[in-house]
Amino acid sequence: MSAARESISARDAAAEALTAPVEDYLKAIYAIGKGTGAAATNEIAQRLALAPASVSGMVRRLADQGLLAYERYHGVKLTDSGRRAALRTLRRHRVIEAYLAQALGYQWDRVHDEAERLEHAASDELVDRMAATIGEPEVDPHGAPIPTRDGAVDETEYTSLADLAVGVPGVVMRVADEDPAMLRYLGELSVVPGKRVTVKSRAPYGGPITLGLGRQEISIGPALAAHVLTAPVTEKASGGRRG
Image 1 (cartoon, rainbow, N blue to C red):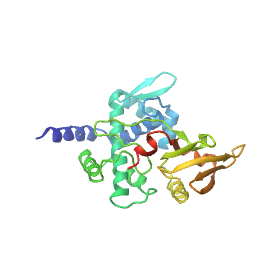
Image 2 (cartoon, rainbow, N blue to C red):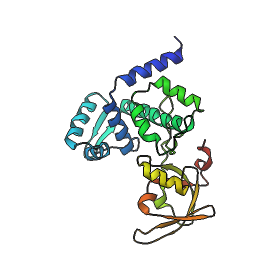
Image 3 (cartoon, one colour):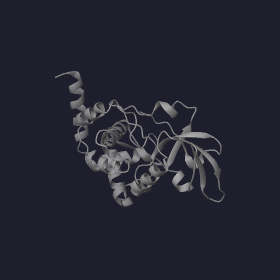
Image 4 (cartoon, rainbow, N blue to C red):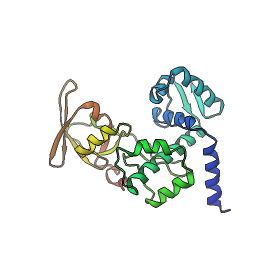
């Protein structure tokens, strides 16, 4: 057996040792803590739509397995092994999303739910082949970074469109992917990863934000703008991450 195949087999065996609920917990804690921070029990419960008491029990079990560590007064953090497992699940999810969009022509508002169903069943070998087939993408259709086979991931933090300064050009880097209707609406407005935008004005007291997209001007609410992450156009990210 080749070294590469042995590596794939080892990763598959590690993945199979974790149940789907465990992977969901680790992925949620990673998202709440933005990779390395802590997550409170109530935050985990809210994200997974579970009762806090149920979450507390699972958190204790995951800590006993060495996947989580308690942070006094803050909640729980992923251990190194927990982080690796979370990133492995995220890789499967985001590669599947990219494959559905690029190879099968799925719209970006449909891939998240499909990937949620498939991420626990797909082997790492299958996911690696999917990634190779579509050219090893660095981001999923919503702009989220895809972890590498070795667990490396771009954790750059970006400014939300709601916080982008007036008159400062930016480029859309990432859009929250959980709400299909929101994605369809943003797609209709052309507020998608890779699009250059400028905040023309921001009405006071939570009023609408007027955006310039090329020659077009649109208005969106600050709640929607908060789900869109941007970077200054001068950054490498403005062109380098788009595939």
